[in-house]
Length: 146
Image 1: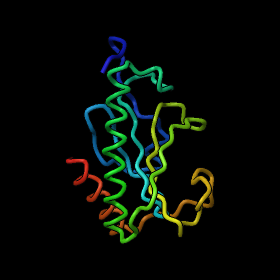
Image 2: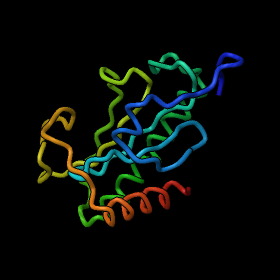
Image 3: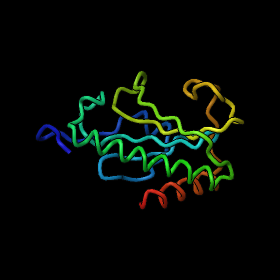
Image 4: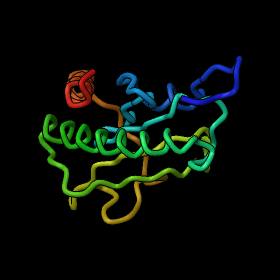
């Protein structure tokens, strides 16, 4: 990963407040979004100061796409583990609220509460029951090889 000498990656404080750590892939830190209504992972490239996709070096952009694909499989694994198989993956890098570059990978179903609209800003997030969160984290980690 290319970055300015002497700078270190720091996770924006919004992420720990709204998600649980899954682990680190070669480029990204992966997190489970703390909203039990949706199987939802967030990937945050561990590159200091990056806000936009085009801020990443070309090699890191290619790596990010591959990690998004891996995270999609992990989101599907989370849905299966929770008994709610995923019908469609939504992938987005919005960054309007949290400026640090991050990519959402959201598993969607025709019976989810926001369908067919976007999940962002829809209703109130629902906390996972502890056992369900543990199941979701385990499924994501296993799928990602963590």
